[in-house]
Amino acid sequence: MLTLPLLLLALGGVGAAAVVTPWTYEAQASVVFLASPFQAKQAGGNPWLVFDSSLTVTAEVVGREMMDDRTAAGLRARGLTAGYEVGVAQDSTGPVLAVDVSGDDPRVVKGTLDALVAAIPQRLTHIQAKEGVTERAQIKASVVTASPKAALAATGKLRMLVMVLFVGLALTVAVPLFAEVLSERRRRGRASSAEPEPKEARPNGVTLPDVSFAESANGAAGRAENPGAGRYRRPEN
Image (cartoon, rainbow, N blue to C red; front, side):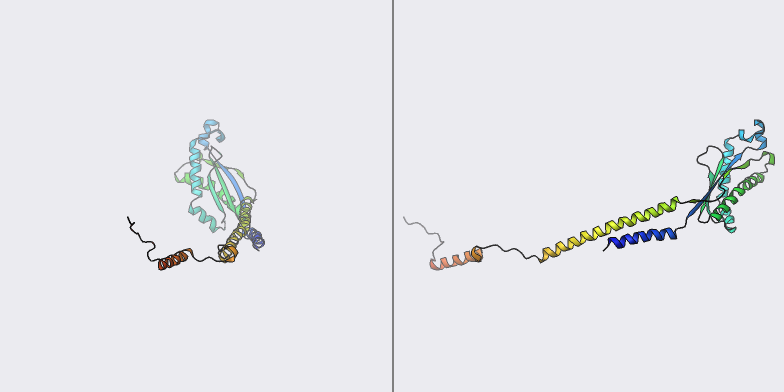
C-alpha cells in the first residue's frame, strides 16, 4: 500500500526535476600577459622570453577589475546575464587569466565570453594609460584559447537527478518498514490489553477461600470454644 505509491512518487520527482531544472552550458578562455616591447628588447624583442612577477601581478589586478560590479552591470545592460569568473589560472605559474562562463542559454554564454575576452585588453590598456605609461612600455594581452561555442555540461544536472532518485528510493524503503514496525507494536499492544489475567488453578474446580479470611475465622471460633486458649498459664507446683 505504501511502497508502490512512494516508488511512483520518486520516479515522478525525478522526471519533474529533469524537466524543471535547465541544462547548463559552459565556455572557457585563457589570456596571457606579455612583456612590453621595451622590456622584451633585452630578449631580442621576443616577449615570450620575458616573464617576471610583475606580469602576474598585473594579470591579477585586471582579473579583479573584470569581476567588479561595474563590469557585471555593463554586461547585464547588453543582455549578457551568464555567470562568469575571471582570475589567475590555478593550473599555471605564469601570468595567465582564466575566464569561465556558465549559464542555461548557450548563446548568452558565448556572447558573455566574447565580451569578456575583448574587454580584458581594453581594461589593461586603460589601467596603464591612466598612469601615463607610453605605448611602447605597456604590457600586452594575448588570447591563448577560447571556446568556439558553449558546450553542454551535463554533470551537474545528472548529479542532481541521481541525488533525487536516491532520496526517493530511500524513502520508498524506509517509510513502509517504519509503518510495518509501528503497526506490529500496535497489534501487540491491543493483544496484551485484551488478554484476560490467568487464574490460579484449583483441584476439581473448587475455589479455596482466602487464606487470611479462613485463618481469622478459625482463630475466632477457637477462642469462642476455649476462652483461655492462647493465654499464658502459670504452671502449678
